[in-house]
Amino acid sequence: MAASEQTRGFLSTSGVEIAFLLVGLVTLGAAVVTVTTRQLVHAALWLVVALGGLAVEYLLLTAEFIAWVQVLIYVGSVVVLLLFGLMLTRAPIGRSPDADSGNRPVALAVASVAAVTLVWVVVDAFRTTWIDLDGPARGSTEASGRMLFSHWVLPFEALSVLLLAALVGAIVLSRRNGTPATPPAGPGTPPPGRSGNTTGRGGGAGSSAGGTRGGSAGNGSGTGRNGDRDDKEQG
Image 1 (spheres, rainbow, N blue to C red):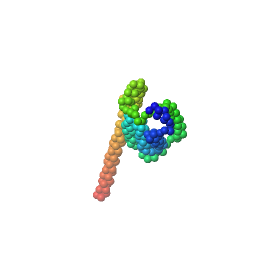
Image 2 (cartoon, rainbow, N blue to C red; image 1 turned 90 degrees about the vertical axis):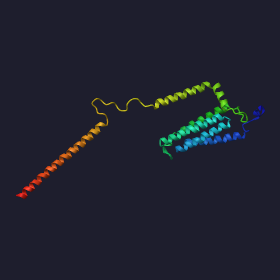
Image 3 (tube, one colour; image 1 turned 120 degrees about the vertical axis):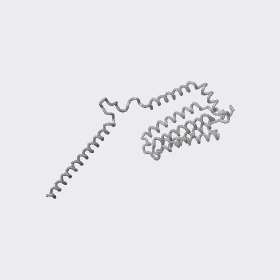
Image 4 (cartoon, rainbow, N blue to C red; image 1 turned 45 degrees about the vertical axis):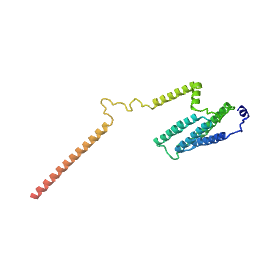
């Protein structure tokens, strides 16, 4: 085994490594389409492809537990949450001109610098490290739990405290404000909404009184005219 690891070079690739490279290219393409498309639903679906490709990469690295966590949490929860958010907010389903941004050159530059830095750090850290794909799985639940709670206890607890702080902050920001929306009415001020009704009722009463008075005047004038006609006929 040691001799084979010493003679193994960069060009001595296996079928699993070729599959890893192809899946990585598909994942990269799906991620690029996710951030460049103008249709929000299509972006969410391409995000499913990108996250699913990342889960396949974990499987090829014999990290089965991390792969299923990737599928359950990101593909099964985050993307579904995004789709529900799109449906509940009645976001446009088709092409949306608002989904385009003028900061694409800056975003491309930042993404390129981040990608080059990440690749350089990973290659420099794992230059001579090889994963025995034919050996026992290193990413099982037992191996991950032992490694997590024996060597990474402090980062794990710090991450849990960070998530708790984010949860408390979300609750504080989303709670209702205790101050009333409108100032309280004074002792002589009628409550809002009553004045309009009072005015309307007064206007209705005024119109009714005017109509009654007009009707009475009309009846009186009509009665006087009929009396004059009777006197003329008798004379």
